[in-house]
Amino acid sequence: MQPDVEIIDLPTGVSLEAILLKPPASTHSEGTKLAVCLHPWSWLGGRMEDPVLDSLVDPLLSKDYHVLRYNSRGVGRSTGRASFTGFDEGKDLEAIIHWTLDHLANVSSIVIIGYSHGSLIASLQPPLPAPVQTSHVLLSYPLGPRSWLTLFRSSTYAQKLKDLVKSPTSLVLVGFGDQDEFTSISSYRTWAAEPETHSGTSDRLKIVQVGNPAHFWRGRAHGQLEHVLLEWLQ
Image (cartoon, rainbow, N blue to C red; front, side):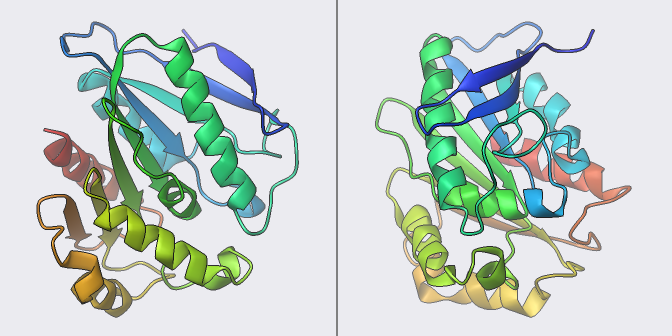
């Protein structure tokens, strides 16, 4: 059975096409868990049916997560026009999270999963206030092309990422393949080694370098990515 597609009207002035999947039989007794998935850059064809994000749905459902996938503005049946800076998409993310919190009972934790350009947008969302525990998964974060992907707002995104990993209430997983075509492995390693990245964050930030996968995580890389996510979610 195909999941129902919803059109969600947001206070940001757009309506987003979305699918909310529910776990088959939740055994989580401490509240509802929610995962929000953000797809790659819409200007290059990114959409909620992205195969990398699709490979993560079953693992998330197996861990009792409700999974929200949506088309960003201007994609599919979502209204509006994609921005070049990503700032409008960041406001949409905040709005759709609050919409979902209003429509799911007793949400205790939320994990925001962004892949490629989606990880840039995910990094704009700070942790939610207590009692909701907020986690971020940033996959193939585009350090290399970040400047032109954000209309040369790289400094803003660099600061947002720094603020995120430094937040005392954040939990962040950064995963990347060592054959990424857009960000060199040396760039990832340099970022990971920077004092402002790792100082005081060892218990809240996990950086995983996966051997062999490229930016698009094709073939067996899906299984590697699933393993990384499941291990981190435990």
